[in-house]
Amino acid sequence: MDLGSLNVFRGHAWYEIAVEMAVIWLCVFAVYRSLRGTRGAGVIKGAAFVLVVLALVIGLLGGSSDSFGRLRYLSSELLGLLAIVLAVVFQPELRQAMSRVGQTRLFNRQPADALAVATAVAEATEYLARNRFGALMVLERQTQLGGIVEGGIELDAKLSARLLESIFYPNSALHDLAVVIRRDRVLAAGVQLPLPEGGTLLPAALGSRHRAALGLSQDSDAVVVVVSEETGRVRLAEQGSLSNPIELVDLRAELQRRLQADRALVHLVSDGGSKEAAA
Image (cartoon, rainbow, N blue to C red; front, side, top):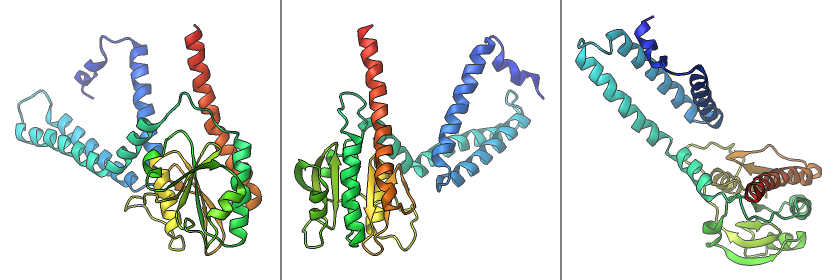
C-alpha cells in the first residue's frame, strides 16, 4: 500500500475523521435504502464497479507522476461524464425527493383526529369493496396537493362515510377519478392523479386506479386507498409502494396507524420549535 495515500488523514483529529466517515456511511446507506429493489439499484452497482476500477487504474498509474498522462486524463473525464449520466438516469428519483422536501409543511399544521378519519374511510371502503364499486381515496398528510386538486371539483365538505359512498356510486359523475381528503374535509372529487414513471412495473391484474395511486405516492407522502372494481380487494399506496390486499377488518387500524405516525412527527417538530422559542 502506498503510504503517500494516507497523507489525507494527517493533520486531522481522530474524532473529525470518525464524524466524516459516519456522515459518508449514512449518506451511502440512505441512498441504498431508497433505491433497494428499484430499477436504479442495478445502475448504482454498475456505477460503483466502474468507479472502483477507475480508482484502481489511477492509483496504479501514479497520480502524481507524468506517466500515462492521456490515460489519466481520459479516466478523469470519464468520471465527470459518469456523474452526468447518473443525474440523467436518476432524474425521476431526484425530482421526487426534491418535491417532497420542497412541499413538506412541518409547522402550523392542525392534524385531524386519526381515529375519526380512519373510521369514516374504512366504513366507506367496506361498503364499496363489498359491492365491487371501484374507488380511489387520497389521504393528504404533510405534502400539500393543491396543484393536483385544481384539476378536480372542489367540495370542501365534512368527511363522512356516506359522502364517500355517494361519490363512488357507479351512477355518480365523479366515481371514475379520485377524492382528496385533507384532515377531516373532503377537499375535492373528480381529481386526476399522475401516473407512475415508465419504468414502474405492476402486475397485469392491477388497473389504472392502482397505477394512479402509485404515481401520486411517488410524488407525495399521501396514503392512497384503492378499491378494485373487478375483485373488491383493497390496497394502500404509500411512498412509491403498493401493499398487498388488506382485509377489511384490519383496514381501520392500518389507516389509523399510518395517520398517527404522521401526526406524531408533526407534534414532535412543533414541540421542539415551541421549546426553542420559549428558551
